[in-house]
Every structure is written in C-alpha cells, then in structure tokens.
Length: 391
Image (tube, rainbow, N blue to C red; front, side, top):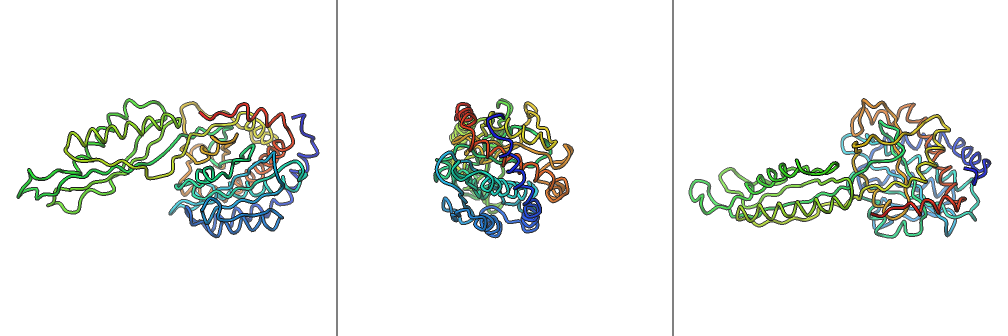
C-alpha cells in the first residue's frame, strides 16, 4: 500500500479511537431498541443525527423511504459510500448484528471525513432500511443513490471470518390457482379444486429440486388453502422463495416456476397467476481489489480473513444490487464461534458482547482506511473498476 501515506492511515485510526466509546454506545442503543423493516424511525434518527452533528449534509426520506437517508461530506468524485443497515428481525431483535453494521458504517464515515481533506473527494454515508425483507438498497440503486459513487463498503458480523461473501440471488413469488367451488358430496363433479392444483405444484417443484444446480432451491408455503372442508376450494395461493447462485440462474429458475404453474393449471383445469411478491436481490459481486485491501487493514488488527468455503452460501442481501452498480465489499467477520448461527437468540446476545465491541472497532478502522485508500489512490480505483463485474 505504498500509494497511501502511513500518516493518513494513522490519522484515520486515531479518529476511530477517539470515537470508540461513542460508537459502541450507538451499537448498544440500536441493540436495545430493535425496529423492523421500514419502521426503523428511531435508528434512522439516531444515525442521521450523528452525521448532521459532525457537519455532514443529511438528506432524509431518500428513494421514497421514510427511514432511508444519506449524509455527504465533500463534493464530486472520487466518492466512497459507507453503508449502514439497522433493521432488526421480528421477535429476535438484532440477531443478524445490524446494530454493528450501522455503528461501523457511521464510524468509518466520520473518521474518513475528519482525516482526509475535503478536496480529496466525497464521503457518502448511506442509511439502508429493510435488508431483512424489503430491499432498501435495491430501491436506492433504482433511485440513483449510487450513480456517482466509486466504491461501496460495508461488513457483516457472522460466525465465519471470510474476505468475500457468498451471497445468492433471491426473490419471492406468489402463485395463485383459480378453480370452481362446489359441494364435495352434493355435486363433486362440478368442482375444480384449486387447492389440489397448488398441492400438485409443490409435488412438481419437489421433483424439479432434485435437478437444480448448486446454490438453487425453491421453498414454498401455503398462504390460502380454502375456507371450509365442505367446499371445494375455488382459490388457493402459495408463496415461494427462489434462490440461485447468480442472478441469471435466478431468472432461469423463475421461468421454470412459471412453466410448472402453467403446466399444473392445464392438467387440473384451473387457471394460474404468478406474480413477483418482493424486490429481487441480485447475487453479490465482490471487488477483489477492495476486499484484499480491506483484509490487509483488518489483518493489522489481528483478525485474518480467509476465502469462503466452496459450496457454502450465507443467504442473500440487497448489497448484491449495489455490487451490480459499483465495486463493493461485504466481508464477514466472526463475533461468535462456528458452532453458532445468525438469526438466533445466541447471535443477538453476541451482537452486544465484548467480542462484538472489539470486532466493531477493528472493522471500523479497516473500513475507514479502505475508504481513505479509495479517495486517495487513483490506481486502486482503476483496479476496482477494471475488475467490476456486472454479469
């Protein structure tokens, strides 16, 4: 990293150290007051208020979302975005550690803005609601929030410390079948059983699942199956979650779902409706140049990152949509052992543990130093964009 002066990194680290207690306080306040997707009003107010007090120009209600915001320090290009997630899980609170993501993004943005001259470019702190269903980042991408950004940086707490995130593409679809109601005893031949069609779709998808490529699967639930046992259901509906290793593979899987639903409808005499129920999360495209730079900074704090285990996927995230637009990183850093799992009460406890505090501060320093590198190194930006993959 000879293109960046050591004194800049030292200044960035000093800025993080000066804010250590305040950042941990932010993480704990978020942890103690969990809010779910698109309802993170207190979290957004806390984070945007901290940015505003530090002199950032804050815009609230970004992309039509009341709990989305941006804070900007500096102008023009180059520009680096530090991303914050702060939504919690229903019933589990911050069992995915978003309180740590938010505090780290906040701290890194504040440190870089204070340590790097404003003439070097712009620091954009982006508040991203509803990662756990809703896709705030995807909506921000569509609204142009990342159009003039050179890199998007964030981390995620986990049970592994991996330099790159194996995140799949994801979407949910509603499939409804329409039949004809009848009395199952009095006039059974007049009925067209919509529920039977839906059940048959589950059977067909189970067979399909045996032939899907690695990283792809379909998981469904019945959301409406009829109103009474003495009425042949004229309407039935299911919700299906589709995942695939790449966005292209997800598109193919979506088309297979449509074909299966149409085939079942023809076979059962029903009619089928297939409609998308959620924002589509694209697969994550890692920026090798930026991830390796982040990993080098984090290694200096005694936290080595390794490549992900082949064939192991860690879910999906709307950071994938951002990574399709700009070079991005999303490393995982462990806050508990590999015998644990996120989306559990144990992980929620870990997100407010002494180990979480150590990880928060180390990651904030590494994110801030990487962001400074993006602003000050044309060579790094060139390598990041040259390696950026949209496919």
